[in-house]
Image (cartoon, rainbow, N blue to C red; front, side, top):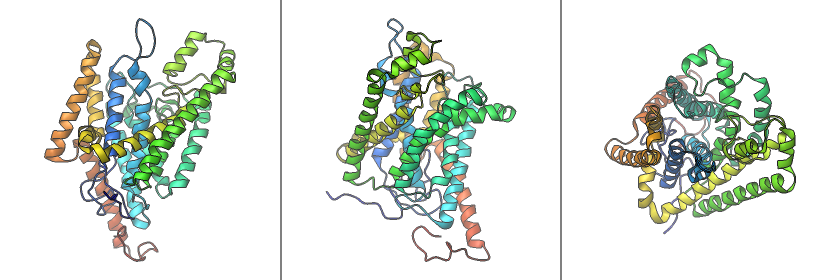
Length: 431
């Protein structure tokens, strides 16, 4: 069967947290309605992984060792989530060919509005005493930081992602001793108003999902979203190269720590911690930041350590999972459909997940609560999509950003003098 190709001006539509409604993208332009089920399925897997990490115990109380769910999903699911957000950003801003002129301006304003809506929901959830860190406020910051990068092509985006992965962790370690300390597990709107410095430093550098290091995931996903994801060759390259990058980085970390003396340097450089405490950080990460006594800590791949090793390793894993899901779509699309349905409304389902965790009843039977959520989310997503389409919170985001886009585009049409971009020949991406 011949491969399906996307038009030069766009790509297949994916309606997760980031895309517009049926028939239009976030800039109000027509777009194809074919969905990439593999992208939705990968996002669904990320959601399910985060549910498992949040609900199941992270360690065995008898042995003290990490549970399998922690080993498989901790850090990896959230990183996959962020990388796929970048892929959706590409879909929403022109696909393989970034928009130009007024269309790109509309996409940028729409993305800023989207960031505001998602962050607002996150800050409102901050009024609840949630038992886990809420990624939504960090997502809002990530999307806001992504606005200037929407025009970049694949190579430039990959270069920027690499720079964030290599430089931002050093800023993160420096900031722990310089910027206001982490005071809020999940800051609320009141915290933002009363103590904006601490909240912003937490969102950018010192929190669980710090936006500056995590820009590596978002920009890598944005770069991949600029490629032809319907191509079997691209899908295979994502699966193979992503896995190879992850294996190479993990092996380099093991070599540096176990053979080249990195672990001993950490022990010598952190004298206030005994080896059991160091091992705990190696497995479960900092609380939430790593010790700053020695830069050797930046070589560990621990979940949520946000080191260069963690960032590059998880970019590789995320791209590999995406490639595998896209390849599976070719042979088992119907099998992936339930997971993809949940992946198409992750904003709604993740918010519901946090509300379910809030009373902390899940401690009574973690496995039952975990599987209960996975089944309930899948059934709800299938029924809702069949009856009403986009998820409820996704519709709120879409309507808000579409209104912003239309206003920006209307200003361009009503201007007294045409700009160079508006006087160019009309095409699929121009009003």
